[in-house]
Structure formats: structure tokens, C-alpha cells
Image 1: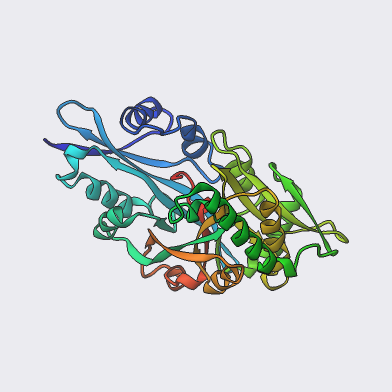
Image 2 (image 1 turned 135 degrees about the horizontal axis):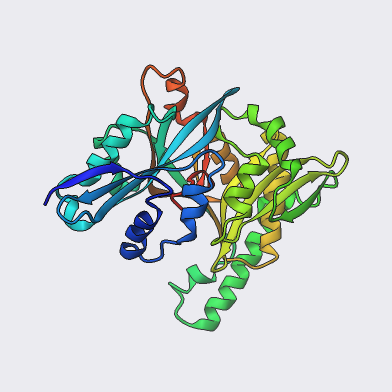
Length: 351
């Protein structure tokens, strides 16, 4: 078996790219193509296909999704390497590594300042072999809100489990750290699905406080979350009553009674972190969710502040890998884990 790697045209090769994913990967949402490949406000995706030389059939694919980012005060365009897949019978030939090498060799010519990806342990090996460098591993943070689903593993009698869970939950509710900050009269809170000009004001005020962060303008947020056709996201916002400014927000989705946080951004973390996070937890405790979870990569100070709210850390099998030239003026900033502010919502196109 022999194969070739060809650069795809997002418009002309749309059916071919979709066919590869829909035929071989159950659950791949067809509308993802419109959102992430074609209508990305930062530029259309760059895509390569692996094709069988005999049949011409697409047997692999890889893409890079442009993303505007801020490094200090400078705006750059990164590429998120994602949607990498090669049919099983071709993997042993090295097709997965070869298609990644093509992207690594060509990304600068296509106007990208650097590439990043979030592979699992298996695909991380392919990425490193292709030239990427490991920056660090993401951390998974979990706050247990209801203990029943954990206790039932150990208590086999239903009514005993319910009684024990009630007492455990009551104890943690009374001692939980968010109780110190709820009902702060300086703020009000609003849940929104669409992102208006107030989010642009927040982005303008707060962006410079983060060393390395993806754009969070209203255009970016509406595209990524507000208008997503196959996932239901909402934002829990912290609003200053006096000025009307949004001081911060948490974007989330609720899946099977699990609150999944996908973005968190605010002005002045030291001032606004506690009221935003405490009210967010309090809001969902009143709705009896099982747990709150999210993945984070970056500033360890933020991880410490989250853990102060009884979030526990769990090892995650994902990492952040980067392809960046050592001559790039941003090399040292990008390769420093502490500079990043990365959540699941920054993984455009590969969710």
C-alpha cells in the first residue's frame, strides 16, 4: 500500500473531507465543518488529506484551525492542530506521522506564528516524533456536589446510601468555602447565551493582564459558544452594579447533571475571582448537580485559587505540545507553562 499527502481546498473538497469523517468516525457532527472549517472568524481551516495512491480514497486527514492570540501586548495568529486521524490499516506505514510533518513544515508559509495541540498520551508520541515540543500537561479539577454516586460504590443498601449521602452533602454545604463570598452587594449575576458589546469592553480591559491567551471578543465568543449548533453553552456573568461592566464570566454546559466549565475569564483576578466562582458554585449547588469539572493549563496561581474551593485535582492524559521556531521572538513565552491561560474552549475545532 502506498499513499500521498495532498493539501485540501476547504470549498472544493468539502464533500470529500466530510465523507472521510462521517464514514469512519461515528458521532462526528457534520455541522462542525461549517463552524470550524469554513466560518472561523480568524480564517478558514488548513487541511491535508492522506489518499491511497491506487484508489484515490481519502484514508487520513489533519487540520490546523487559525486562532488569534495575545502574547503580552502583541497579537499573533496561532494554529490549533487537530482532527488528525488515519485509518487503522495505514497507521503502521507511518501516515499519521507523515501528515503531521507536512503541517510542521508548512505552517509558517501559511501565515501562522506557531502551532499547538492537545494530544492524548498515544497521539502525543506522534506529535513529538513530528517535531512538536512538550510544554506540559493539563490538570483536571473536580468539585463533588452530591456524594450519592460515589457512596453507592461502597454502601450496597439503597436507603443507607441515601441517608449517608444526605449527611455528607449537608456537611460540605455548611463548610464549603463559597459561603464566605455569596450575596456580595457590589455585584449582580446574569446567565447569557449571546455575547454583546460588554464582552468587548471586558476583553479590552482585561486582556493585558494575561501573558498568553486566545482572543475573547464578542465575535470570538459568539462564534465559539453562542452560535454553536450542536452544543448548548451558557455564560454565568459577574456584573458590577454601579458601572454595569461585566467583570468576569464562566462558560459552561450541563451534561448528565455534570457542569462542564469550558471557559473562564475576568478582569483583576485577585478582586473578582472569589465573587464569581463562589456564586457560580452556589448557583449550581441549589440545582443539585452531581459535580463541576474542568480542564486547565497554565498559571499555577489559578489552580491554587480553584483548589481553595474544595476542587480536587486528577491526573489527565492530555498535554499541550507546541511547534515553534527557536528564532521566533515569542519562543520563551510560549514554552513557559505559567504564561498560558487555556481551558477546553481554547481547543477550537477538536472538541
